[in-house]
Image (cartoon, rainbow, N blue to C red; front, side):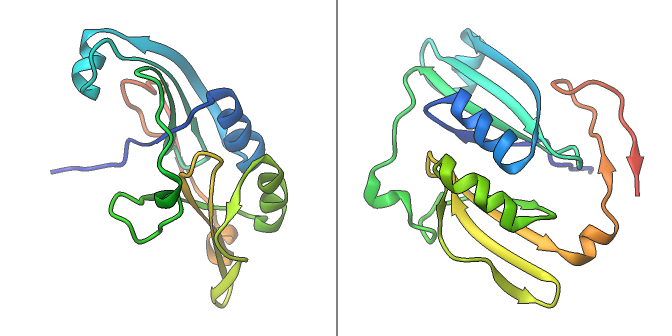
Amino acid sequence: MSVTMNHTGVVVTDIEKALQFYCEGIGLELRFQVEAGGAELSQLLGYDDVQVKAAFVGGIDGHSVEIIEYLSPKTEVRDASEQHKRNATGAAHISFNVTDMDAIIERLVPMGAVLNNQPVALMDGYRSVYLQDPWGNWIELDEDAVHNEQQFTIHQRTSVNPSPGDVRL
């Protein structure tokens, strides 16, 4: 059996603001954007007459983040008392390896990022920080000296990302 990662999805209330946050703030690239609905998507998502805006963004490793804004039914904002709980069931996070964590944090905070902590050195050459995007999705930024010495590029070919790719290690 073979399993590979396809994508990670986050729900937001404003896809244009989210694209600015994830692309200009974190440094991901827009792969494509779509507005979709119909019976099949309604069945998949479990809502009648669903309509969404979605954008796929990603980094050099080939993994995509799907940013979703529900148009119908409208995106619901999580209760504020539950918004910041890291230990709550369903409190998933996305982790990114970055090369200049401090510069990224400086860009993200004015865009609405909420820092959980200041960057912390977990071991020699490895720093981490937890933050939330403006919609409450948890993000971990990792600055890893070993990874930064030899980064890699992998492009995964899928039905929603069909262009041929390469692997450079």
